[in-house]
Image 1: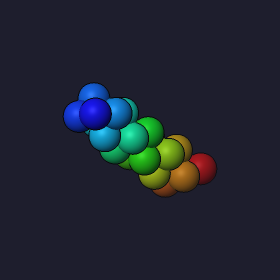
Image 2 (image 1 turned 180 degrees about the vertical axis):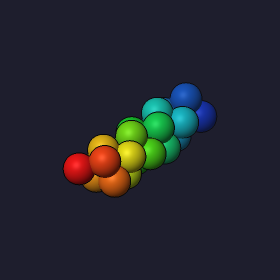
Image 3 (image 1 turned 120 degrees about the vertical axis):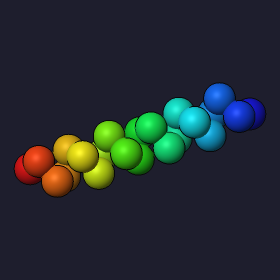
Image 4 (image 1 turned 45 degrees about the horizontal axis):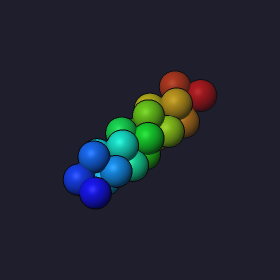
Length: 22
């Protein structure tokens, strides 16, 4: 369960970074 939360946070951070670059 913890790993799932970490993955979700990573995905959200990656998406945010992508939007920032775009």
